Amino acid sequence: MAVETSEKSVLDVYGRISQVARTVHGTLTGGVMAPSEVLEEVAEAAVKLLRGVDHAGITLVRRHRPEHFESAAATGRVPTRFDELQHEHGEGPCFDAIWSRQTVRIVDVISDPRWPAFMTAVREQTPVRSVLSIQLYTDGDELGALNLFSDNAGGFDAETEEQAINLATHAAIALSSARRGEQFRSALASRDLIGQAKGMLMERFDVDGIAAFQMLRTLSQEMNVSVLELARRVVLREVPVGNE
Image (cartoon, rainbow, N blue to C red; front, side, top):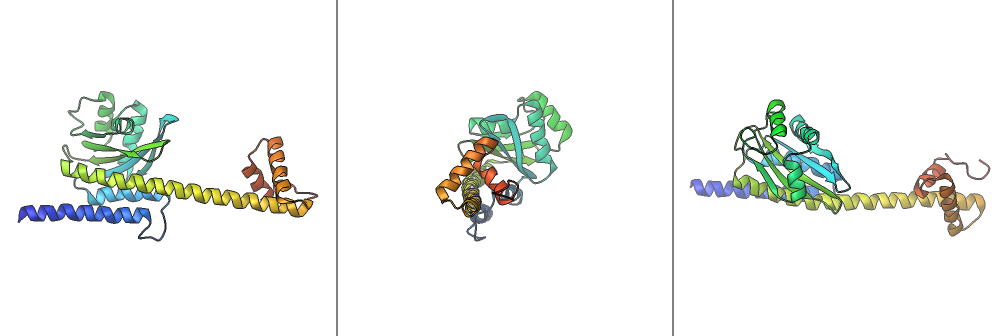
């Protein structure tokens, strides 16, 4: 009976993780979440669903700026401070999880021999005693880690680790979709803004769309700003059009 109850508990956790996945993918909300919303949802779900997790956070880093850590989501001050300490010492489990594409486990920050200076700071400045960092692949330029923290030594067992990897996989897919959606919406907004600026120039100077766009390109080069920024200034009347 105890075994059946344990199995049911595991199935319940995976079922709830699947529900979180549907939420962040937008199937329950009617639309894809923004990237920041995806990350916050996943971090909060980790604390709610996974046994032993007292705090959770997501750390992101870009390939072209590997020294810059971003605490993209956190369930409180503890994950953020943990990231700050990693940044200050230039080492830690999130670094290893992100760059080596593996899961990094700290059973006890008191006895773990890795990163001695960093571990000392963690013991002195946070309640964290065990850590689980799971590589979170997002896209070609951006990498990250889902970081789980327990206030107890040995806070995570193999079952929790497996569930966390499952959650991280869903998170990575959802974040990638959210990024693409954000880029698509940005592209549409840019196109509309340039279209408005072209329309204003076409009306003012009685030219066609090709000529109006060429005017934007030429002026953007002369002013050393992007076509999109120039279009924004034209639409907001920050750049005089005609006799204005």
